[in-house]
Image (cartoon, rainbow, N blue to C red; front, side, top):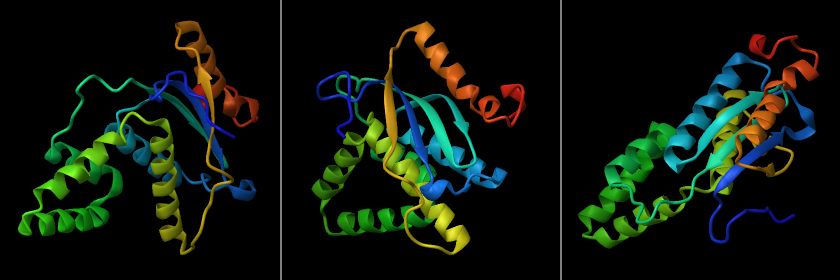
Length: 193
């Protein structure tokens, strides 16, 4: 099914995003897994220029309320800033490979290759699809490495619903997300979850 966006050539808007683990396995049953997931979310939030308004991580799925701003006119990010943000998102090990490639291009005098790479990275910003893809992929890699397994852990890509960017609509959706553990009978007050 084709994803619906409010603007042509832009993924700007507010979205309620969900994704569930394959076979409803409870991969988020540990505090460590939830913490790692949110660490990844925050790193990609910073890297890709989106904002997570609220979230709820249940044992076998998650909810994120994500605001994707319009790309500002003339938006750009210097290489060093991009690399620092990227390292927080992908980790030292993956960044070592990126830095090695950039050094090879520099030694070969291929500054244009570095600039093309940088522009591709900047083009990924302000994209809900890219944010969700990166978060889920990075968590999958962490989870599989930790548990000595391979393959996907997610049921499908992700679900998203456009949320009207009006105060009342945002509060209603945030409350829906925050009340998930209450509806599941896990707690009586969402603040306890």
